[in-house]
Amino acid sequence: MNFKEEVIQLQNSKAELFDADVLNILNGQSMYDEFHSNKIMGSSDYVPFNEAMCVHPAAKPIFDDRFIQLRAEGHQSSVESYKKIVIEPLKPLFQNHYNYIVLWFGEDVFCQMNLLTVLAYLEQSNYKGKVFLNSFRDDEFKVNQTELFLGSYLNVYEEVLMHQQKPSLALLPVMYQAIELHLSMLAEDNSVTKYIKNHTHLSEAELVKQLISVFPTLGYGDLQYIELIRQVRKA
Image (tube, rainbow, N blue to C red; front, side, top):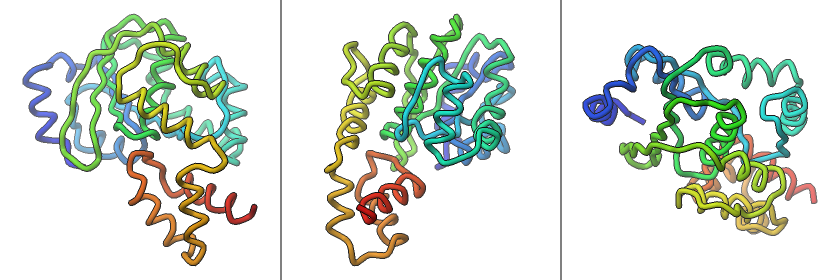
């Protein structure tokens, strides 16, 4: 995705978000690589959030030892590997003070559950600066910027990602819709598992391609779909 033109427009309206006291949190490594190598946000800092909070159990406090162990087990990874992929790249968030944090997350379920986790962590750590969300859809080069106000996300994280319940608090419509879809995916007989059962003739690789195309609002990647396909086909 080419963000450059959109970022130029943002720079004209919010120049302070391009300074050294700004941290951009990006939804994944490939986005980080693009932003970091092209210095898309000026002299500000960048970190990737290399997680997939839309799958596997979650815990709090976010990023503590129990959280790390639980997430590593869910991803069938070692704690050391999880720390290297997820925790190490986030060090600037843990160690530095920033007046502004800019979150770059899409509108699909994958991105929104990651966004919810980061916002909950900012509340958990009593972050006092300003938070902006730059949301986007992968099918169009358009970035929508919204200032977010912390205060309810840790509760929503607990309700949705720890207890699989609908949120009791008001949210941005895009996050609420993503949560509804996320919770629907927890049912054993959901739209994706039905699709997998109806396409037994396809190879795993072919089926992954089709699922990514047919269910864009989920935003799942290869790993999430391969896991689902194997679960369904093993049953």
